[in-house]
Length: 261
Ligand SMILES: [Zn+2]
Image (cartoon, rainbow, N blue to C red; front, side):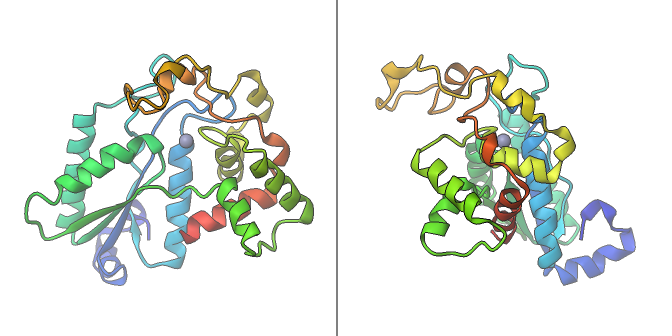
């Protein structure tokens, strides 16, 4: 059940069928290397929530396409909204969702930079007595690292071939990076919005940290993120190039685990 596809008279039954649960996906609009679109996190979380809602009776609210991005503002396409504004927006949205009759609000996050924002916001909802509860899923993205671990533990993924598994285990053993815009996100967007991906642009920039802040490593001192993101990842891409392993089977194995999660 998708909130903005329902007609007014359908809400009463949607509230009942969902047991008053409304899921709010939140992503962000920010650069993801040169090979993925700025809507990457939004596309991912929207897809996962909507697919999950086909299996569990919940109502999915329109995705919040903005998130907390204190960095990336030197690049085109990123939209930075003040934390105070985001807190207010989340407060108003949750109150409106509850006023409509949904008393259990689950925010599902698709962007790492939202974690502190959502933690603070959900804590703030507990300050005053309300007739609804808000919780959040702090992270949902299942990646090649987890996939390799699950394969080693004996979990079966019939969709993957022997060669896929060999590739994944080698990728994991080599401790290759799979962060922002890396193999995980690239595979997911290739499945969800393939027309927006340009693999030929993946290798045009480096995804490795430049090491400018090595002095601070291990000191516990940081600026806006513990990794000095803005300085360390000027291409806003945190990964070894990994497109050799991206294929239909891998994309669907990752997504299926995300949806189950
Ligand atoms: Zn992302």
